Length: 100
Image (cartoon, rainbow, N blue to C red; front, side, top):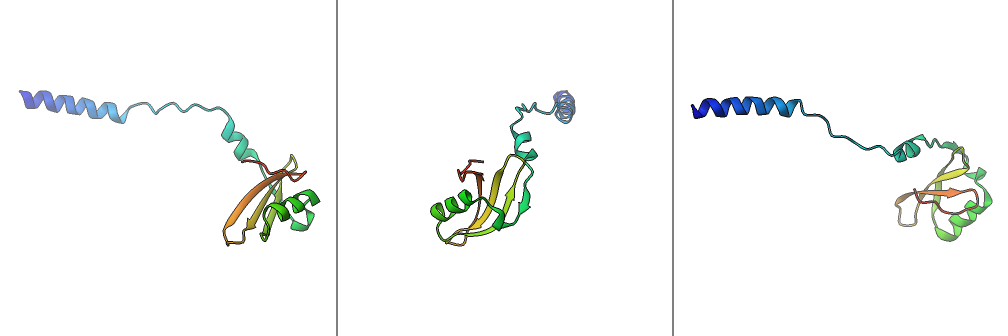
């Protein structure tokens, strides 16, 4: 009798696990802003002078590989630092570094 009750409980329990509702994920819109930001690749020679100056003073010896711009005139820079590591930087048109 104990085995019958245990088998029934096990069978019912396995059904509820398979049909359990997925957890609710709260959405505050932050990730939409991150994914919506589309950058267009530009020539490194098209970077504004303040960004070039900020890069030269704050990241001495770094090599600028690629540059991108978005609709809000924010720039994404792919650089290789002196130690050979790849770094992605973000700046506004005035040469201020942005946290992303």
